[in-house]
Image 1: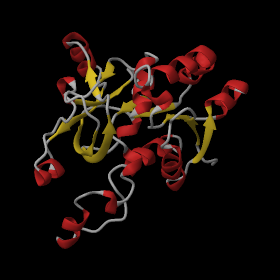
Image 2: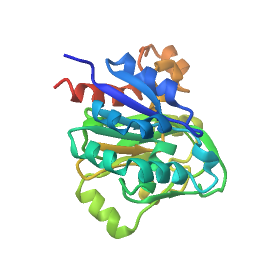
Image 3: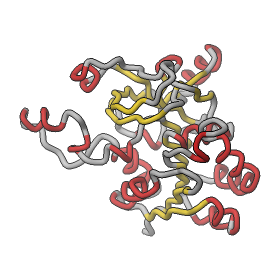
Length: 252
């Protein structure tokens, strides 16, 4: 069986392409980093892929709001191809800035705005899995790093109830081992209903503020030395399971 093909978007300030490619390749994918301008020149290229990725970074310097300019460029030039991609049995993930791009394109509900303290936040968070999706298979709770200035997720109470009903809330911030160990608050950015990650209605599109590609290995965790002392030693980190799930979805 051919390896599932992954297209990872790049250009204009997206800067997490390489580690994201490494993650997909390491679990059996065939990942390609493609500049948005190259995709615009050859839009039929998108039909060759099963997984579409909008990685983290600071597209267009966040000058018009995080993810908005990149989303507009994609919509203005690739709307037809994107719709065709979404209509197939495919998967999409937007990580951090990529999540902001997906909400700006209205592929995912809600909006992301400035953190409650008005500052950039760089730390680890604990997450509880709430949703149902090929991306989330076998996950109950994980810990991942965040690094963002506009990660406060906003949604109305009515929309929240609908999303709960449809299992569209993928992850919520919770006070787990890392927050307890470092005495940190669970929800660092003030996101409504503690939402860190959401899904499309069909579960195949995932948007998340935390970075799974930065938690691929056990030693990435700030607790790895403490766990090692307790005799807990692993190779893989919490984040890699998301990439495994995506690749395994196309090997079923």
